[in-house]
Image (tube, rainbow, N blue to C red):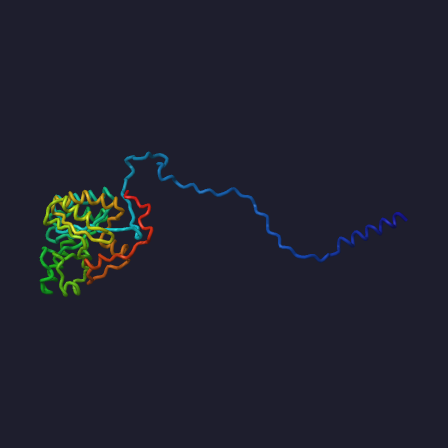
Length: 289
């Protein structure tokens, strides 16, 4: 009897194991597998790499700076060069202060100081044409105008390997032919301290410092005068302290005005005196370093 009951219990157990009981399907999230965190170690820019020391002879210190379109800008420009003595002093001042400028050079003078012009360009300055022989382009007939521009281009090509796209006509004199057929972007200025006339560095500095808001302005100076170099030596750090970025003319037009440089177009006093408004917080936190 006991054996019979034991057999019956075993059969019931086997039937229960084979029974499929319907149940709700639940999608379980897989358990995450623990892994070691990935840590990216970035080099410390203030710590020399292993095997080298800060300030070693193998390191080449360069001056790098960027232009912030939301901050004030001014463009220093130098006409009538190059000068065999004074032109090469100006890039020194600019480089020391993290600044750039535009040099409008006279074609027939380029052979007087070709290395100074090449150095200015290498340091990030812009080179523009100031005609071939500093004649009044506005009074020339189309044939004479074309001959002057072609001669200037040839001189620049020999020194720099390229021709300038910017042209500043001597005396700021223009004509219909110059504005419509020169194939260049014509640039004049908006602040003129007449350094060529006074030859007085203090007077030049006082004029510019008293000119009001210089944001978006193009300052006219001349490189063949020692007084203008001395004025620049004072003005560049002063402008930086006032929060201005010293940029090239092309940078001023494209980044500050948000415009494009076009051939046969005049960028003059009226143009530069109306820069677009800056953001309300422009210049906050900007250093003159």
